[in-house]
Image 1 (tube, rainbow, N blue to C red):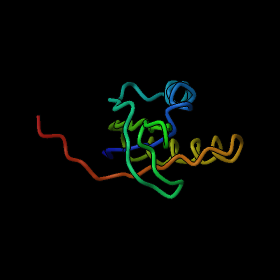
Image 2 (cartoon, rainbow, N blue to C red):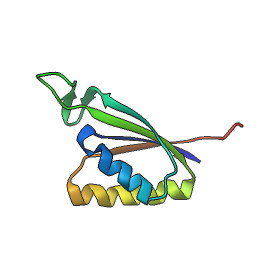
Image 3 (cartoon, rainbow, N blue to C red):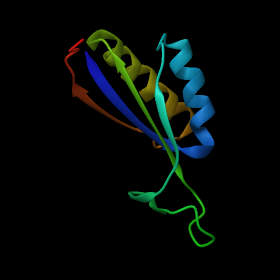
Length: 94
């Protein structure tokens, strides 16, 4: 199993959710309006730096993680989005 963390511009969050549904991801947790500093500059939700990011977490099996990463790569190439994805191996305890 893999935990995936996806970071995307808040304005592209709905498109990402559609892609997750089409890819068969059953569910996720979202942190909307996340602020911080990244390769595209500050995202602070302020007048000077108005953009924010959405951070989504999901847990999927290893094969789904690989296929989802391929789907996301295609999505980014088509629309120019700079989505970031990180994964961790997880173990189900209960």
